[in-house]
Image 1 (cartoon, rainbow, N blue to C red):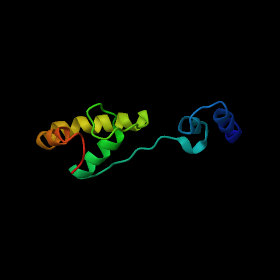
Image 2 (spheres, rainbow, N blue to C red):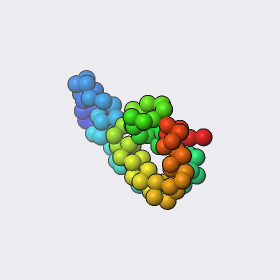
Image 3 (spheres, rainbow, N blue to C red):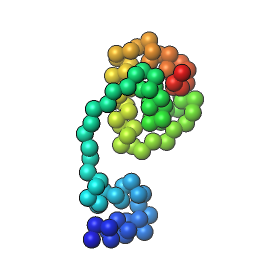
Length: 93
């Protein structure tokens, strides 16, 4: 039944990542993540869509929302590194 609904949604033109919500494995997950500043900059460059980016990115809105929250903390906790990231066109070194 779930898969049949999934197929109907795909046939109706709904994106796979949205349609999968009817499948049992589409439940949201919680997790803890650790990374260094360089890895964080790389993540932000890939998962945020900004006009001032050197390389354009088109992330799914859900992951972009997570990245935006992470960027707020990054800017507050590492202002010099964050400034360099912004100045370099949001490209990780």
